[in-house]
Image (cartoon, rainbow over all chains, first blue to last red; front, side):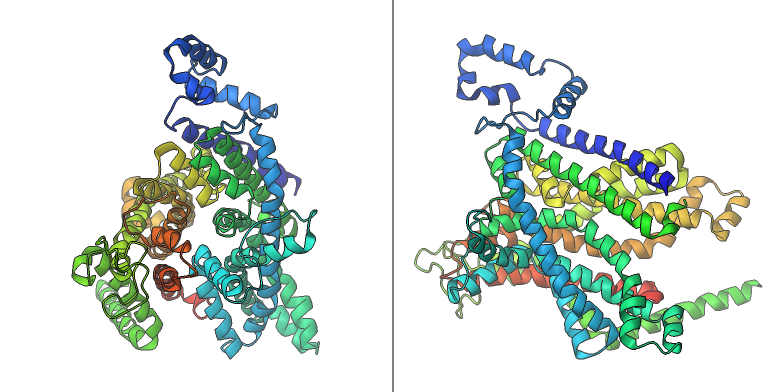
Length: 318
Length: 296
């Protein structure tokens, strides 16, 4: 297990290196001179030319691109992610301010997905071909195909415009107004969670069908165990591992989906911040946000793999 | 086994396959419906002018945001343009993005996967770490990087889809090559003196085609969802070009007064993605009998 864990940890180093190279290269390809953008309108004046040149040197823009990359990495490792061009604040603190809202949205979506996927996926597997099973399979197909923002708009039309039960959009921190926060969380979390719920249901159902046909379940039946005990203790426990791995890996898809959902519901999280930044051409902010999310997901995948290796010994040998 | 029995076996296999294809149509009407939906979308993309009832960009200031009527079956938008015609013309962008994006991903991903699996060692590790890095980006965030570098356009979306699916195809092919490399028929061919190139092209690749077909179909479905999402954010195809995503973005502002405007384009995305997913799953069930009926 130690060797497996060490190997997986080591593999993560080059992965993070390539992530940072992609982020750096694509942002560096953005049109415009970073120094001129940092100076703002002043940069266009001819008399400011020496000042602009000085700033370019200070930012290291006169050096070759690989050296610029190393400068950037050095700063990032020291916790200096640069300043936002628009608000002149450190991009890291802007990002961290918005992170709790996005994490709350993702957690809400995951909770919703788990709450409906588990009972329905298991019931569908135990009663294959029944009405419930068909309804579940219908939900799975629809959930995987529906554009999330369209579903969000439909929910707003129904629950905010028609029934006036829920506020259409906005975000208030939980600490300021717990009730208002949860009320506003409901629709975006459900919209975002539908895709994950469909994915989980699909795998849970398939795994349960497979496991219920396994020899050890037949043995448990032959021993005369009650069906409930067989399902929970023997079948579900074994069907759970792949399902939880998938849940872990789908967090990335959830974060991507959150970018769109935050826009639909005016939920001011990380995705909302990043989309604003791209419209403002605030490239340092885009760079920080994307780097943070991608590296975070890489570490998340590592964690999932380590946990998976822990529960599934077969994986460690390779 | 003599040559005659071998021929006999092959012809029987072919006959059985034809029979199965024919029975499919009768046994699986949903799959047939899905194929018809995709065919309709392709027709709209190729000859939109023959199918659309009117000009998709014709403005009509006297009939803004009208509900469905005989002259405008799906109503009109905020400039009085016919929504149905814009949907029909929008199909081209969806399919171009899906086909070119996935083709780009195949063109890069398949060679990477084959090389990685066949050569192994350091090259394999290096290539796979790059794929891991690409997989770490949620697709929409990677698209934002591409838009930062190249601006918001159809080309950027194709590029995004192309790059996002590279690791998925590369991993698929790497896995297949690793499994097939040691297969008896490949070893036999190598013993007979076949070159590496011949082994890959004649023996290994044809055996991956089934999985490739399935993944291509499913990837095209995701590509359409990505186009819709990006255009909705305003990071995709720019107005006035009609795409289903940009239509939805515009429709959002009028959702309360013109719900049919939101309904049309969204439903089309939904149905086309559903159809592609259904075809992908159907192909998988047929190509891999172990999965039949499990619905994974």
